[in-house]
Image (cartoon, rainbow, N blue to C red):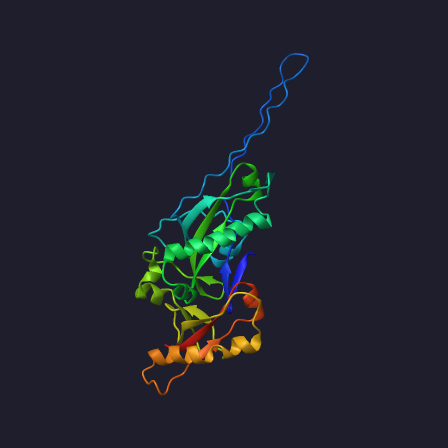
Length: 274
């Protein structure tokens, strides 16, 4: 699975790798009646990516299956930063699996989001209310055949629909602090459910903010009636808690669709004017 869906949001994953240099066979004919057999070709695996490296990726680059982007100075403009590098397990029951197999890719799809939680900190709700997303990269099939067996987890931030936001400041444990939650929070350009509504990072111009989540137990989709009705009380309470007038305030609620539930989003979102 390459994309994890949130309500009208996409968490990008990709495959990427650097190029490698293939050794060339060398066999010069000898002046005898027979010639030596050519030496077998050799290949050098690309090096393991550097942890804490930064990249200036566009959205299309981030969701592409491969990338030839070079690292940039982390003090310069960048939209992704590597927060974890590890080794793939490509052997199952004695059989070597391809790097693009579902089993191998599922390892990374499970590992990187978990390691992102450790890296950015904050509560589960703070992470769900942020626009920070993990993307992951593995070698190409050719590079894997040459011996590369790493995975790379990068942190990105969605600025809006199919657009990455620049990463700024210290990112380790960024969601432990209110200013980090403010900078990378999830906001809206208008009231949820209206034609002008779009999700944007809270550092962009906005008028509404996602203020709480309504979690459900994992399992089968509870059904539209149940998920739709579950947000009334918690969302009203969340909006009332930050309203100037606790008797006169507005709030909104987005519940997960069956499709979003299947993609892993087992919670709704509460919204309030900001």
